[in-house]
Length: 174
Image (tube, rainbow, N blue to C red):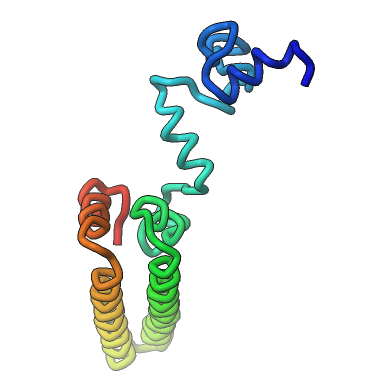
C-alpha cells in the first residue's frame, strides 16, 4: 500500500488516523465516501449501516412486516443454524398459507362480480363470497397460531424475550 493511503485506510476502517475523526473530511463530512454513502455518528449511521449490511429493509413486504423476515430474526435473535432451519420451515408453511388466502380472496372477488353482473342481484353468490372470506380468515388464523406455537418451542427464554420486545416496539409485526 502506498504510504499516502495509510491515513485514509485507518480513517475509513479503524475510525481514526493521522487526521483525527474519520468523518470530518470529504464532501459533506462523510469520511471521503460522498453524500449518502456513509453517515456520521449522531445521525444514526452506525445502526443504519449495520442494517444495510445485513440486508434489512423495513417495509410491509413480508409476513412479519419486514422484507426478509428469516434473516432479520436470525440476526436480531442470534439464532443457531438449527433454529434458522426450523424457522425457515415455519415461515415457508406460513407463506404457503398466505398465498392460498390470496387465491381465496381473488375467488371471493369473482363471486361478488358474478353476483353483480346479472340483471338481478344473486344473493347466493354474495353469500358464498362471504363464506369464502370467513373460511380463509379462520384458516389463516389457525396457521398463524400454529406458527407462533412452533416458534415459541424453537426459541429459548432470552430469544423469546427479544422477540416479544421486537413485537411490542413495532420493529416486527405479524
